[in-house]
Amino acid sequence: MIYHLSLYTAGVIAGAFLVVVGVLGLIKPDIAQVMKQFPRSRVAGVVLLTICLIWTFWLVATIQMGEFSSFRRPLLIGLPIGYVLTLLFVDEFLAVRALGILCLLAAEPLLDAAFLRYEMSRLLVTVFAYLLIVAGLFWVAIPYVLRDQINWTARSVSRWRCMHAIALIYGGVILGYTFTHY
Figure 1 (cartoon, rainbow, N blue to C red):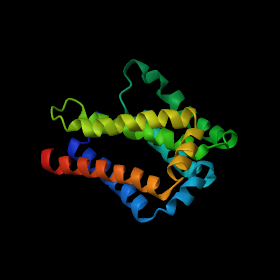
Figure 2: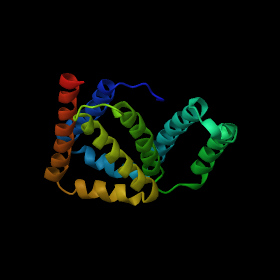
Figure 3: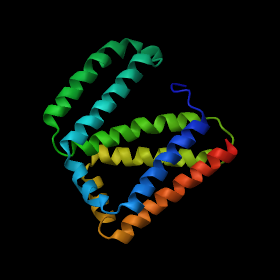
């Protein structure tokens, strides 16, 4: 275990995140116009990529690598170099790619918390983690997909609110099970 996160804590984090996203989308549907600017936002890309670099650097520096421990130093040197090269040469959809990397990083603690737990409700957190993984893989490899997803969702206020209502309900269910079963 890398993170030592309990299922209760993971459930609170995942549920609270979904509830906040859902409530913001329901209360302020005009935020969709701001979200349309996100995929090409250079500032958001640099901020998210910096968070990913710090998180990945910490992981590589602290995890048990076993037989691959000889790769630790080259990876610790290569990560900042890759970060700088990415900032210099990846201008298109940098924010989307960085968000995809962040989703991939965020899924592991959720899966780790649910590992070897017997409650069926752990699958609520696990499904959310796998949704993060699938979304992260698509957003890193095919970044224009997030732009298309935002445009499709924001095409009408009712569609925007419906998608955020689903996130709110799912987050509420995760929080409900977290507070009553974990």
